[in-house]
Image: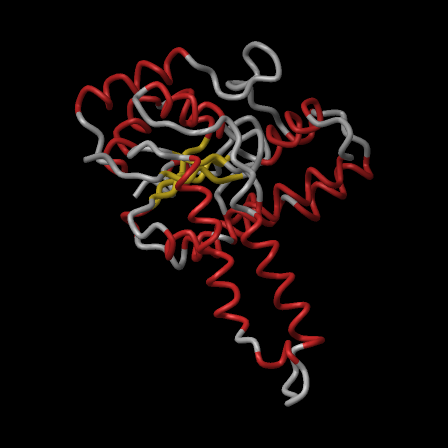
Amino acid sequence: MPKSPIFIVGSPRSGTSALAKALLNIGYKGYHEGNFLPLLSILDRAVDRHMEVNGKPHPFVLAAQVDRNYLKDRIADIFKEIADKLNPSPLWFDKSGNVDMIRAIPTLRRLWPESVYIFAKRRAIENVISRVKKFPLRDFEYHCIDWGRNMAAWREMREQLPADVYTEVDQQDLVRNTTKVCSRLADLLRLEPAQAEKLAKTFKTIRPQETQKGSAEATYALDDLGWSDAQLAIFREHCIPEMELYGYACGREYFQTLAEATAGEA
């Protein structure tokens, strides 16, 4: 039986939509956008902030008598009840591309012990270019900071995950090394042969999150973008450290070495 649920996580504009469409095409059910379960992380932080101020030990304060972990667990159980009701299919996925979803993974694993995770990633250069075009109401600095936060959160999270419950899919690999990516996904999800074959066909016909035709395959050198000195300084501060940790280069070659291009494929 294929694995379920599947949680697609990662920075926006990194191929999350292509992954969701492919899963829909092989029989999984799910919404084009999730954006509900990240509330688990947001409420978790809200409970901590509130209890740190109002829950200090005191015999005459109600908040002080409440076990915050019990409260968080009960809140999470409500989320599971709602999510299960709205995803009645035995095979379902959720796509929520933001840092709060990544931080919710420990809770998601408790709620759905059989769940698996696909981290969609993309080099910061191409990701920020795409973000700025798709979401112009957010400024350049926000997109750089948010890409870095997503990548850092996943690095921290994958250290806590068994190797057999996740995989990483780089958008360039999804476009250029489709067969290899599909093989890894089929193994992770325990797909039937017919599903695996259909998955590969789907990826070969659906281009991930293109802001314009051909943009999914395009790679750029940082120094050739025409960004201002201020923009380059922002990018270098918030993106370069994570790019280096993920093995990304700053030129058209995309990855620093061939070995780095296969990182996360285990």
